[in-house]
Amino acid sequence: MNLSKIWRFPIKLFFSLFYASRYLRGYYFDKKRMGWYWCFIGLSSRLFGANRNIPWPVNPRTIISNAKNIEFNVDDIHVFQTPGCYWQNQQAKIIVGRNCYVAPNVGLITSNHDVYDITKHVAGKDIVLGERCWLGMNSMILPGVTLGPHTVVGAGSVVTHSFPQGHCVIAGNPAKMIRQL
View 1 (cartoon, rainbow, N blue to C red):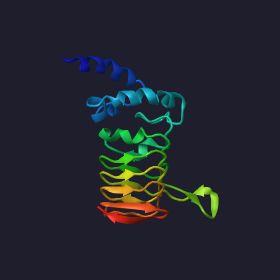
View 2 (cartoon, rainbow, N blue to C red):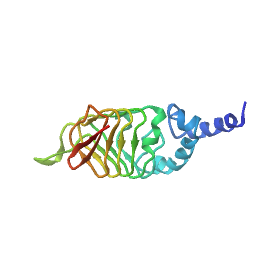
View 3 (tube, rainbow, N blue to C red):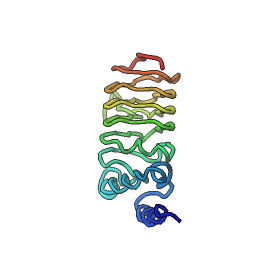
């Protein structure tokens, strides 16, 4: 047994007191070891902050409203380590494809207020990110948006409708396709 396997067991045992064990594996835990760092950094938020009910490590400056409505591969847990992101998904799902990247301060919003009565919310709509999507800093993904594989969202963009074909760069407010890839 090599040394890395010896230290991994007690660390995993300790962090499994705070996070679900099924998320304490994969690329960032087995190959990179960054996962263990993220567990440590996220402990304060897990114990005292907004992410108390999230069963995987999350950056303390990121907010996830409902872990049950997020689907992702455990190898892509890095998308939750970016500070300032807002994953609002009480009424609908957010599905994250493999090898996606999310820059700081990105908002993924599955439901919005009713414009006729702002004390109420309209029904949520799923957000789907295809494989290898990249969401640029300060971008906003609104309810019902599907981004096809290899879609790059420019910084500061507001994505109001879907780009299911993928393989493109979109930018602006509202986002438009500016280049095919």
